Image (cartoon, rainbow, N blue to C red; front, top):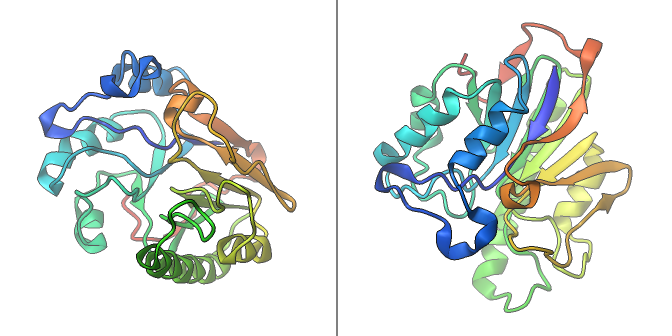
Length: 246
């Protein structure tokens, strides 16, 4: 089994919203996303999708995008992004997800020996224009990550990964509570997206001994990034936590 990650698919939802206004990097979207996935991912692989999944505003409108993801090869773990306004209660989402798809929220999941934890995150202290309201949301996300990591610590697995939507630092890469929690948990890998543009500044590339992967879809050319080729480390059939949808 191989582990991939790709964030920010920004699928169009029932309203067929396009990404054309965001520049030439998005030409051919969303078909480029589907084509890149099919050319990269196999049925036995696991793909992390950390946020900004659909432009839909209501859950019913997002179902077409969730079904499109379900039709792609591999199993998927989803995380909420700041544009996922359609995201319902986690219990409702998990009941509706097709088989082979999981959603994280304040918890973690173990799939074939891979333990996945994470939270959406938020803009971090020290960011330009950071407000008191941002601080409240950031502190809430710190607590959600703490809960997720505590859950993950109780799950068995030989490979551990943390997924965020937002980067875990400000653009000056200053340490904070998120980076402290991740550093203490010492996962094998960290993945995040959210930031767009040709050459975004201030993107974290190292965190102690954790392999760090920036996986915004447009930055990857719409092909999921290989995080790990786990090979014989996989334990077939071992799935627990996060409302197993299989």
